[in-house]
Length: 596
Image (cartoon, rainbow, N blue to C red; front, side):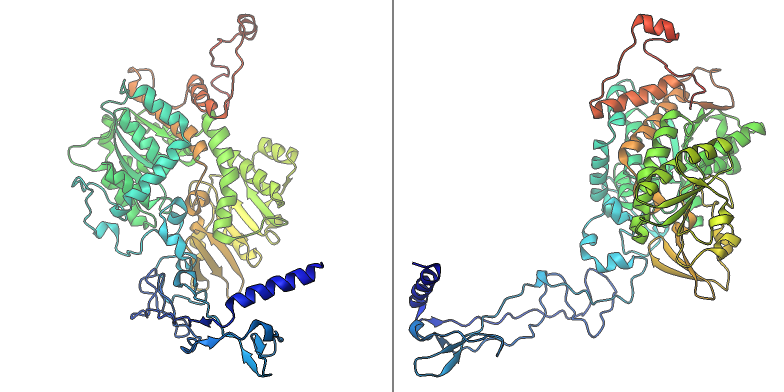
């Protein structure tokens, strides 16, 4: 028996089973109408007349009429003959008397949560990005990525709010204390990738090596910083904290810290005035005198020197982690104005060779992708500076297929760039043709107005250095140029002839302003900072004078060793004969103090 005959008999049996039975009509779906006509996930957003005023969980009125309430008789199977459904949009059946009957149409029920209104465009979005306004799913999380845009619709300045945590404490100023639960989850995730800090917390919390320490800090307030702060507290320190960058604070993390009892003064999107106000609130508290400074960029140190110089009488030391801040410290030391010991964490091996290189190698791509959605393959990119940050950026962009040029003032770094396969140029030679300009020199006025004027239409301009001095953004705030905010941290600067450049984070640090950074790498830096604080705080009088010091190599190596178990790595040990041959201690240090 052929397959066709078997299939025909099976179909005939199935049809006989339903022959003569009535089909009940499908009742119409009666959706609820939204009285306000406003997207509830976008407060204040007006809905165009063409868009249906629906929200999540609310169905639109069905455009198709309900089926007839009269049941339709199914024709006998023996008399059925299917006609071309394309003739009338459905199926037809031929009865035994020769008449044609249309088969009943089954209405498909469409659920409200399956409907998406992609044609809606809010007319009032405040400070939220357009991408977050359209994507409703992104409003359900206060993750690091959510922090990149805005995690709150409240336009009220935190300085005008009266907030208290669950214990009644109000010694903080953040965006929204209600985000604390989300921030706590972020911190718990970061702890998984910060093994050295967690090991240090476990090993030293019994000894409390920072008991009595009053640490005032000014760094990026992220989940990784929160792990560091909680580690310092576990080791006995009291902490007060402000942000070193107006765009890098994760609001939900700041809320979690405030809920945990930390005095935090920071929120994403501070003004310049807010920035200095927050630092002052950290320092200027009646009855509380800091004795240690943890700085990133030197702004906190500068503020204390300017406003409260007498505080340095009780301060035991400064720990600085950025090239900008270290440069300021060396200037103070050279001028004889540095009145306390300072630890240069930026030039420690664990900072230079890991944070600066590997962190930037990954975060440069993340920052550019999140802000511009640019494709890197075939793009011409110029990276200004070939230090460790520049090396990381160049390696990442080259691996993605970009054509990378490098500018450099140091012949040693320049030679490294050439031998790594990059073309060394002057910025003026390529400024008209490149698609992306990235600064990472730590200097000022690297990209001046003349270069900005000569850039091609659509050129992306960003900075990977700590300070916003590398790109001359101030020169772009003139009447003839138009600024157009595209999304959070992304501006189009438009020239009178229509040419525009894409400026990211207003020239501030790209990766921490516009994206996130790899937690594991930050664990290395944060552990180095913690050990530097312990060293300076517990050092006997006279060990460190009023100068800038590098972290001892023994501590650098200790920080590295704490991270090796994560990779299931096994160090080779020197034999006594080998150690004697090299003139080393079997347990290290294995490098001289001048090694970088």
